[in-house]
Length: 608
Image 1 (cartoon, rainbow, N blue to C red):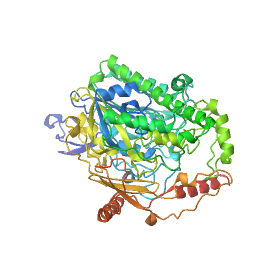
Image 2: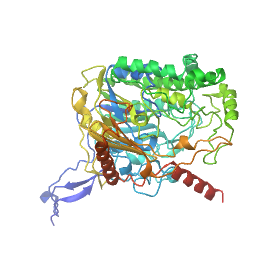
Image 3: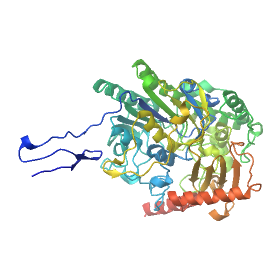
Image 4: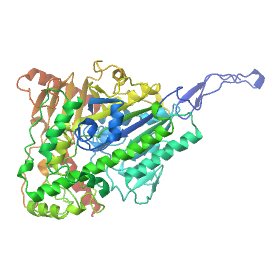
């Protein structure tokens, strides 16, 4: 009996056994299978940090007025990528980030069910095994892998401790995790999972809890396997709603925003030019027509609006402080120099979900019939009476700042989160730090890039090839391109030259710096209402949406619409969008009205 070339399962993939088997051991030839891969010699640790709902003009590292000294230090000793993009909203960005593939292609066109999802290939919300994550690739190649913080990729039907856990962090390549599975959480009253079970916490702030856990994971690993590298995915709940932080942080900003959102925008815009993170010839877009000038607000409105921003700023600075604790730990343990930090400042732009007056313990938006209705004037009075509760533990999960601050923290862009047609939703800062590799400290990189580029970037930096199979499953190709080419060559041409965007029917296509985009109506702000108000009716027809055209190479923040001047270019890009839509399962366009109907239907079924 002779057996040659038998295939044996290794756990992560199937290996061919190349020995020889005979009846007698003396006549047999052994062959050692590699059941545990080792990372390449000297491979770096990787810390991937993702903030939530933070616009381009919020943090001080990119000209904002919120102090983030630890992120500043990473940027000053690393690189600022000024032309980096996300998908424009939470789950799609996270799916694209971890899989290195476009969000519709992995079924995450919007959110996991039963939230905003649909039974179409691009929207079912179930990431399949053929779209493996960067954590799975690293785990199979000698890395320990950890996740702390926001996940938002698990369907609601799989939240139970009974499983299945295929779409929990533990099922997507993470050895250990301390996470919240949904899209938002109270920062103190937490519903967290650790590994494969729900756990209770001691009432500490989420930022502290996840940082303590991240440090404990790293400490334990170095005790047991000091030569083994780790991958840490650190995804904060900040600065997503609810905005909650101890007063010691928010009170640091007392009076700092009394001049209002118009002055904030002008000041940040000047800072951004000084730092070189926007073009020197850039112009600031006009204030959005939905917003009042700060000078036209009443004293009572100014007071409460300023407090919203003080809380947001304190929340974000406290988040930076906790990131600083993690950095300090790596420095004191001698691991910092061989650690890659990739910091994505926001999974989308600043959030418009606070609408005109902000949200505290009640939400006036009655569109879905799920909240308590108020008149506009009653709500304004109510918000003013809630001044002392802003940022505290009594607020609801939707507690958020007003729209004026969303535009301010999105400086220099127009529009907000969800508006995937606009840079304000998709254009976020990226900070890259790797002391062992980066030669130009504090450098600026203007190459076009997208969140799907992070996966291949990590592979190249760690020296690990993309696996053909993960857990026996043939892998689909990555869609992103590595950014390593640009790290030590600021003049290298962009390698990622074409990208589509779509959220809630808002859509865009970028090709070699030209951008065609269309806003879809109705959008959430179209539908936001107060008791007794009648909203205009919009024809929900994607074919009637108005397309615009921009040359981002000359007009990076979309001020001059060139659609009428270059109709052939617009036609070319629209056709290109349709090609991408077919390729990546973008159609049908699932919009906010579809979502509202789904919520009403689900609510009715639950109340039967």
